[in-house]
Length: 169
Image 1 (cartoon, helix red, strand yellow):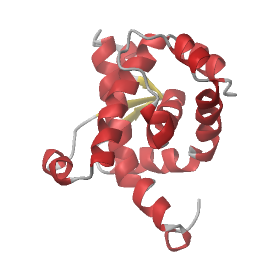
Image 2 (cartoon, one colour):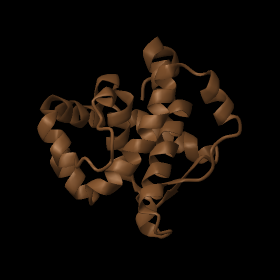
Image 3 (cartoon, one colour):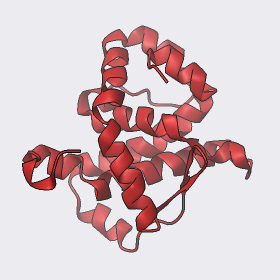
Image 4 (cartoon, rainbow, N blue to C red):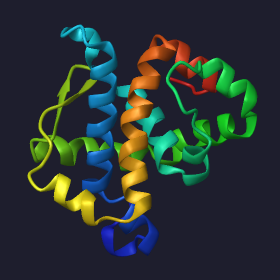
């Protein structure tokens, strides 16, 4: 992990652990909402936290997301082959930032880690007020994270998602 002082201004703003933890919180909430079985299957698998972050944090990919969770991941990949490779590469590039965000989120009571799953625990106080005054891009990231969580649940087992995207587990 790059020392905080050595990070670029873009890394400090977009990839800071607090913001990424909120993205993960939204991914986990969306995943759980779509699963809504109240059991183990409603927990965001850790590998999908990396995939979901790659979908959300890259602006060009985020703008290419489908408008509904009914669009299958396989269909989207067929229609967006360049984005598929960008997501796969993003999983590798963002690995250390996502790990840092999971730890940060767990330390601050926003996320929980249960085995190989990320669990939404509690949104931080003031999140709604923060989002109200945030930039359109920040709000779009948060909205997209919830959508991507739901979409990834619909996409099938984590191994299927990883295989479709060409990501090595």
